[in-house]
Length: 156
Image 1 (cartoon, rainbow, N blue to C red):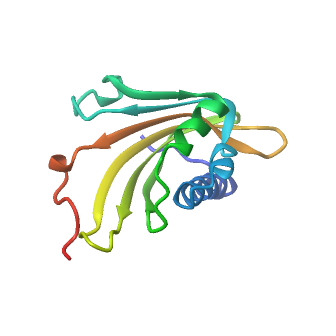
Image 2: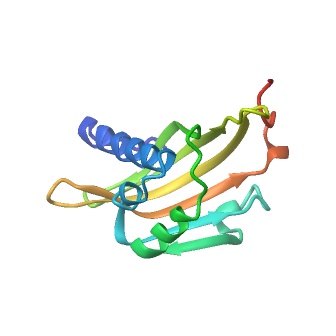
């Protein structure tokens, strides 16, 4: 089933995710946390049951601004890391919230090793406020294990 949103809402969603990716890549913890509601929840799911992975076990959970900030502060700062967001689709939409899903590829080049490619599927609940702001209230990240990908790393 196709779910549509207005062109304005589509731009807002893309801008929110682009700002989040840029803040994460630049290790801007404050900018990263600013993309979430104060009571947001971020779950990281393991790749154990491909048919039911959103109901699978949770590797880690980060709650609220402080929990998300603490998690991001502990992510190593890698100046060459790049999050590539693709295949954004709207799962459901109302005036107050939009559920989205997208594929995220993370490329981490290293001067001594071939670049590492990691992939994940992100499912987000974005809430829309009357003042025009849109923020992520829930983020569920499903990591794909290297053996589930067509290749791991890129040729040197």
